[in-house]
Image (cartoon, rainbow, N blue to C red):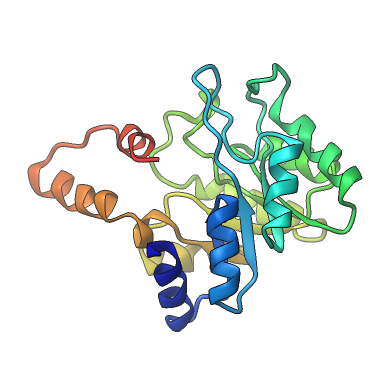
Length: 215
């Protein structure tokens, strides 16, 4: 399977972990590589933008597939069930007290709340995906620097989102990131191609729509 080959290639290249979507992919990757897996399950609904492991059942399945860490949407967005996304975190924490939980947030304030609710790891994965941050096209490194400074004794801060070059990743490590997750810059050929085309043609369409259309 393609994702397994990508995971093996990432391990060959020196990656120290894999972030994987869906129980099937998590299970396959865990069998193929000896690396910790941040697991999630993207479940889409037309009435909400909350899609990263949005329910307790989804978190349970991700864990049963072998994920070492579970990623959850911990933003203020309203879920398909009609509750703020962050309310799931303490529910999962109570059900699985020993499990490492990765809070995907979009703002500093959401990061503060996630830590208060029991997150072990915080990352600005959802910069640009919420109403408050939809104008962001590049990493908000000033906000991220504040997270690294203020959260370092409470949780691991991992950069994820809009990281396209090794130089981008190094900036985040310099600011205090525990680690950096690189996704589309490695795994999505259509988005890699699009960045070249946008630069060469001088036209930049909405890459988020391109990304979502291919989920």
